[in-house]
Image (cartoon, rainbow, N blue to C red; front, side, top):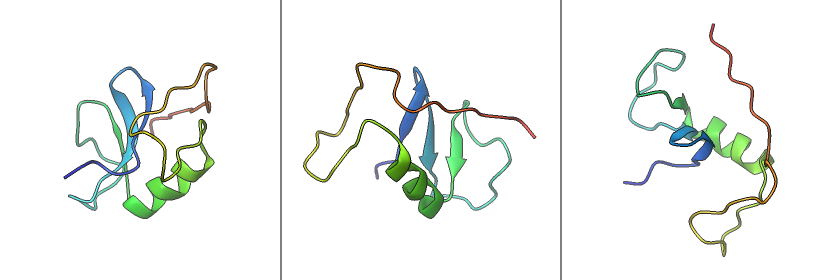
Length: 73
């Protein structure tokens, strides 16, 4: 099954929904930031470039897109 609402921010590192666990805030992967699917969807709606229902599966921006700041707790 596809990983939902994936937003790459550093090569192969992304923010994305994670339906396979519910212990967010702890390391679970090689560096991606796992979000609850509803939270990932909400964030996805705010990012650029816009990806609509008729868009291709991968969309690249000519500019830098939406800035993301990831902080460790």
